[in-house]
Image: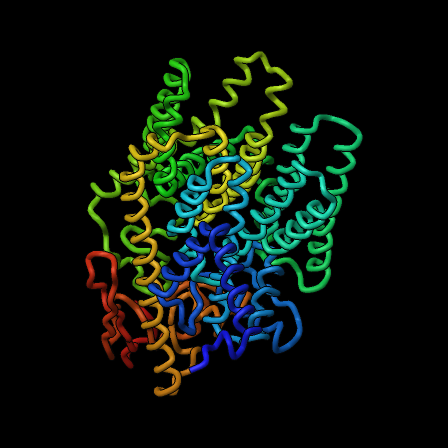
Length: 584
């Protein structure tokens, strides 16, 4: 028998060359391939397939459908973000593969993976070992605030991916000053701004870092000016367009006016309330970041600690103790909750994702001691993060503010300014815990930059503990996301059966926030205490986790979960009794 290589020598050479290229690519990009395999494995485990929206993504999904079917831009009053970039991205995928919630969800999962690749490039700016960069990206990928949100059509992950990619190009431009890099960074910045207006921090943060590194000169000022004109001009053009065409959404406008309200209240008791909430939200953010970044922080902690002199060690310990005491005392005096989960949360006790149906107070609580322990770990992580932000500042003043020290501090300036300017609007107007995803790459970059090279033997000490923590957080992310998708899949199965087999109009159903938003949203809707607030016209039928007076149970629908306890509360299909007018 004649071998294939003899019969088809050209094909053999092609396959051989292809194998060599793939081998070289895999060897050079093995970390990126490993991250991709992990991301795809996690995605397959949770099964993102399902024709249902999640929380606010019903609005963006509806806007995509309107753009495809009617060729016009549609924004809802509940949209606080610019969102155009998100809508166009979803429309592109829907045009190629057909409109469906699954298609839109997969489009964000793809951007989630792209965001991880960009984060890898971003962290390489610290010049650290590939393994440490890889570990930082793994830490991000396994957090519920990244992976969980990537399984939706919310703007968080697209905004993250675009913003970090823009910073990657700008950092490389800072190091090489190639025009192509400047143009690419500006382009991604504009798209990010048209997805979320807070991407305006990109030109601000980079300009400060560029000015720090290059010094004040005509050349630096011109380049900074060009960047600000391009990016702020794009936002102004968008704002002018929607203001004079479809009108600004209510929440979009309200967020913009939050600063005016806070500033106008200066010197009044209301201003003290703003200030109290501002510092409480900052403390909560630090604790959340401390928990989810702890696998990375602990890995580098021994090496970092050895690099500190006795005074810096005392200062670092004092920062950690001060923040912990501040959080407990301030939270108690201001009547703020400081035990996780706190604030407006996507992480709600021992489940993931907000419950947006009637009877949402039926939860599966975890033991309080567990959340106390998690919060304590978060306090430890928050202290490490604060130390990484404040110790470089201490060293700068200790060195008598030398200009050479300041010019080398561009990484610190970039990270601190990005985090500060991103937090200010949320600190004033309120935030969700999922907004913390943005801070993570900047914290990771600064920690890597402060740590420098780490000997292999020092990693062996902390790696086992860091690995266990990462696996626990990764399990929570995967299991929690699976459970969130699972019960929503059951809910929408009930609702579709009620409409298709039962012939019931959506106007007669209270199916939850996303359902009524999709089918019965009306900007002129008047809320009443007798019905749910989410645009319910008639609650003859209710899908809920609990019974209501005046209703009879038609059917019980169990749903499984992976997080303990493994038996979740069943969903109930209720119908109002004939002698009842409304819910009591």
